[in-house]
Amino acid sequence: AQKITQTQPGMFVQEKEAVTLDCTYDTSDQSYGLFWYKQPSSGEMIFLIYQGSYDEQNATEGRYSLNFQKARKSANLVISASQLGDSAMYFCAMKETSGSRLTFGEGTQLTVNP
Amino acid sequence: DSGVTQTPKHLITATGQRVTLRCSPRSGDLSVYWYQQSLDQGLQFLIQYYNGEERAKGNILERFSAQQFPDLHSELNLSSLELGDSALYFCASSPETLYNEQFFGPGTRLTVL
Image (cartoon, rainbow over all chains, first blue to last red; front, side, top):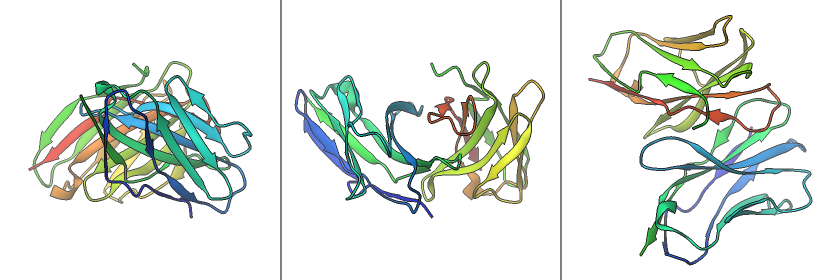
């Protein structure tokens, strides 16, 4: 069974600094996808970034990058130049290519301080 | 705006009651997923429909059921409600089952009193 672990319940960062949110995963599948979602206090789930298990390059989307280390089964999210609007809950998720469901971690609450 | 709509936004009801949550997927998306987010269980997958047929089932209680209609909108029915059913219920859609990204709706917040 697939499992996602986010070990940081809360993280704090100063505005304009970079922050790394940790995510480790467990799966027996060779083909899978890793996702990060942002959930602001308003509740909606916002897709941030995707990494396929066979992608050789780390995914990047604007200020977001995914530090993918396949051998260590980790998929950490790096947010550069943090902004106050980045304060939110961040979820790491995985989807096995053969399946359909997303499996989520418990989330990390990020607070950006001015 | 993901293009997925969910109604109602908020729902307050009493224990033992039955409610229906509605989801309209993005235009052209055939696959609809339901997720439940609660304080004690986190975010968990409930059920998936693809083009009207049930495709995958997760941790969905027997008191809960879902369906997807010919126009592709989906409804999640929750019956004999308990206090523990209070949660944020998300619908997500994707063009097909193996498509990577799932587009989430704004959610329906259910409160059972």
